[in-house]
Structures are given as C-alpha cells and as structure tokens.
Image (cartoon, rainbow, N blue to C red; front, side):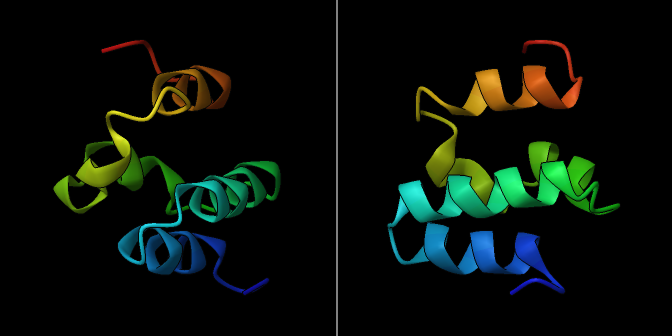
Length: 66
C-alpha cells in the first residue's frame, strides 16, 4: 500500500468504500505521488465524482474547480 497509494485508493473505490479510497488518495497527495494528477480526469474514478469530497480534494491538490 505504501508503495502505491493510488492503486489502493482504486481498489477501495471499486469495492464501494469511498472513505478508504479518499484516505488513500490523501496519502498519495501527502507523499506527492507522481501519478495522482491522472486520477482527476480518468473516467474509472467516476464513482467518486458525486462525493462531496471530490472537488475539495482536487482544490487542495491545486487543480481548479470543474
């Protein structure tokens, strides 16, 4: 998990565990994982798009609001 927090986030997201998915995305943000920006625009992450944490998370990362 520590080596690939984005992959862990994806697994939890696919299992329907948004809380754990966001916890791992936050870990990816905090450790500056290079692949994190690709998550924002990858359609596979659409199950999280309606979550109230999605846009605030990306604002914290430094992306403008959609």
